[in-house]
Image 1 (cartoon, rainbow, N blue to C red):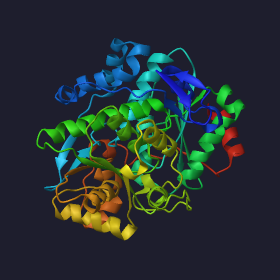
Image 2: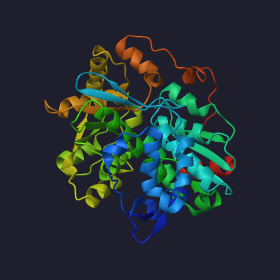
Image 3: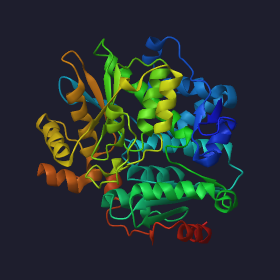
Length: 426
């Protein structure tokens, strides 16, 4: 597998190198030179999930790693279920929150951890990542206790739910967490600056577990195949898929799946008030506003890092950006979307509710669609209970951390301060 740097196409790496580097020169994202196309999609969709994942990821990685090694990585990473739940007669939720940290990030984080453990087991590695909510927990859980790997997670102070925070800030050991006095975009910028600083990057053997790492995106392709496989058991038509979008890694993975041959009618990029992409798709101008704090905090991203990959896929496949529908919901619209799902008999949380409403707003009378349920409703217990006037019981994974102490350091959004901190803890 060959990948090139979107900013510097002359920088070409294989998968193992991209896995270890995370970002290319000048913060450039790695992108595959060729997107594999799968044969006999119907037979592929009839396979069990794990067996299909081996085929999907093998199409990308077997030439470099060997199919046996790919099979082992998949079996270790994807050992939990996912289901397609009916919300109403036209909409289904792909529930991606049945993993250990109750969020879709478990898929990418666990696969990346297994890849690094297998392909770089004799090297010291420092993972530096930023989270707007769920990435932190998934990465911390996936890498917790692994030899030779230290993890630092940056997150915006006071801008993620308390239970989200406790899932990754209470572990200790090789997991170090930093509460940053700013928003997610500032955290993300600090990560990118660290990769540009040779002292930090080389001295600490730096890697990133954000969705900028290609290994995470490849893993996420797999659940789109599962969504369509389950959908096709009941419906002949191709689904519209609405993706709750923050940093846009999730949509990127979906587009990769479609490029590989997965039958999807179209994608809907659903955002909250941080609507840079919907405005861009509608007006043609990339004009990020200041980040706005919302109840769907994992999507509070004004400058999504993965957007260049979205455009690269569209170009590679000779598609048009008009094939992607952008929808942004206000806070009041999000509240109503959550309540509307609940009235339909489906308990959800703000991110999925935004995607569900985006489906309703964009489907024709003949369409049926899938929206992604990216986190368990209990991860947003306070918001869901307040909006719906109900009590949301805590699943065991959250109950286990509810009373634990947060172990985070607190820093200003200052790179010099972060750099000093990294050399102290790593």
